[in-house]
Image 1 (cartoon, rainbow, N blue to C red):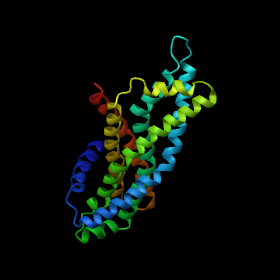
Image 2: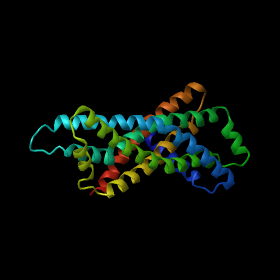
Image 3: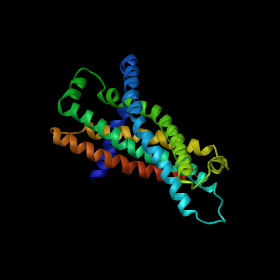
Image 4: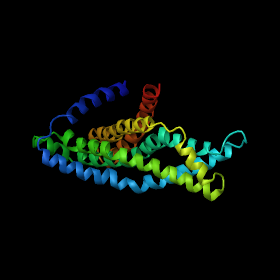
Length: 246
């Protein structure tokens, strides 16, 4: 019954996130701050992960496609489709769920146990909208750009790995990237990314907002929020894949 309690309370809690802010000027300022905190601060980690992810994909595909009947450019095609359809939108979102989610749950959880959220409510501020709304909007704005960057760096990493290892000539890798490209794959990846952005910001915020006790409970809420975020991302990944790629 605990899961249904959380689902119901989360839905009711989210209805407060979408209410009109008291002051749009402050709300916009907080969105810009969260773009810096959630988006710009994640570029380094995403860049490193994406580059190595593309390189590993190239080496593994080249190793497994060891047949003269299969053209070499298939490696580039496989790396492109793997990154666009799954690795960049989903794996990067899971990584951000750990990085961003724990930070959000810890921040809001600390505000809850130190009565800062209660102070906002007493002043007549919609604390849920004020604290969670800018984070959600900032992630919905930033994450698509981060995922596009991940795709580019992943393909570049695969290209470099193919040349350095001698597994795939650069010209064949580029031909594979261009071969039978479907622009809808980009649209599909960005739709998933926006949905995942909502999940990895609001779920940790929910657990942090409802934390009780002290620092130990905030730590537990942070851990639980990351686990729930990753599981929900995987569930929605399956659902969106079924709906969008039929």
